[in-house]
Length: 394
Image (tube, rainbow, N blue to C red):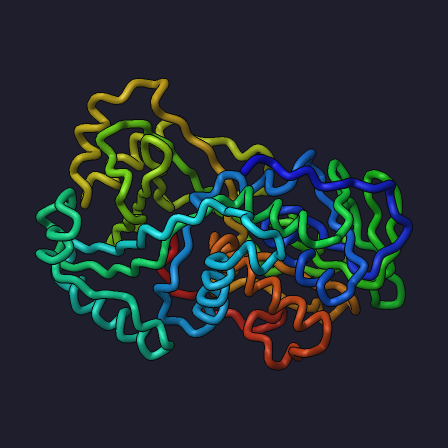
């Protein structure tokens, strides 16, 4: 489905709720907030929605989690994507949903037991449709896997989607007002509470602001005197066009190294979260021209056909794009109120899981906004103690 135009009205003087950021987090939040009766305005500094980190995502989703805090976001979100047209009330609306599965594979001799324990942890959370396979079984299902694979997990209902369609679907159905090419420059406060937002087009009065500005969230919060525990990591996505790439493959992740790939329109997206120091927010994010070669090397470890593909590739069949993960010390998002400023909320720090968690994360935020959920019950609160996490980060 093509781009859906979002009406942009004259600059308003006030709103019940202002959301800064028109990516998937901001538009989902706008939809659920407007459904609760909030007169909602979304500020987006770019000329279209979903144009920053959302636009360069590999856009996969999975329910394969053994951490209850992640499962509580991902599992309901996947269910929402499976019935998205009904959710937004637009019959026939499609989001490019492809449930071809997600395969985690290992070549580690200790990998089979590690993956068994991981699947057992999922079952304890009610995620009962993840399968554990021996290396032999994994190769029987997917013959293009390396003979070195010792075990794998697979969930058939995992997959990927079109984030562009999700963003515009939420926006179209929300009833919120979208101000494009409008930069939020400062959160204005008085007496310890939000009074409005200073923008590139003027002042917008409000008593509630949600910062959902991805890599730019920390800087904007600082204008209100709030320091967010966030850091930014560059993540890159290579596209390789080759007819030998199996179009019916699942998302494939190397559980030992973190390299991954999935089919996409005559080729594949490849990624690998290689170690890099944290960076500063930037737009556009510069990409490394050597990254596709490194990603191909990473994918070939467990999918050997990528070695042959790499040998015959020409420059016009390879591209690379980069974005920034907004990360927290414990790997969990920041969703909730900023205690030091009444009326200031954040919806950021998704650690690269923003697309797969967007529906439920937005509903979680709105439950906090309406008081149906207290900050004391909120596992993603801004002022929680942070302990370094150990998650499967792609």
